[in-house]
Image: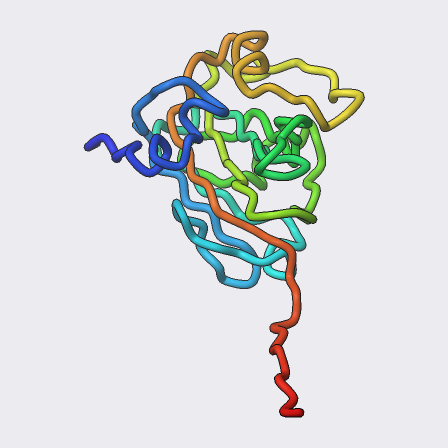
Length: 181
């Protein structure tokens, strides 16, 4: 399988802010119920991502297992992300060639709701060494999650795939009215 480019992940600092440099070696397809596909740099609004997406994994076989993490490295706002990272979802034991519905949800899906600025929401896929490898207790708080530490603590290594989307608060378009005096 050809390696997919990680260039968008470098340019938008997913590699750097969230994970160390790696090469995409597995294909991951993320689709929300609204039929919106996630691809690097796409913009989705909170109304589009209200419920958990279907995440398909194309790599390995039924004996290969993966862990999926969704995180926001820009919490509470991109100019001062002091809560970095905010955890939105963890699923483990996803069999290769299936989708996230076949995995074990460790941390329930939390809908992205950025309040300030444009946030990156990052899906990371890690290859497990074996089934039931990731035996974590859910974090007490979703804020301050660290994808690097999570991967290290669970012996997952570097991700095998990643994709991110941008999201910002939905606001009505406002027009400025000029009144002649």
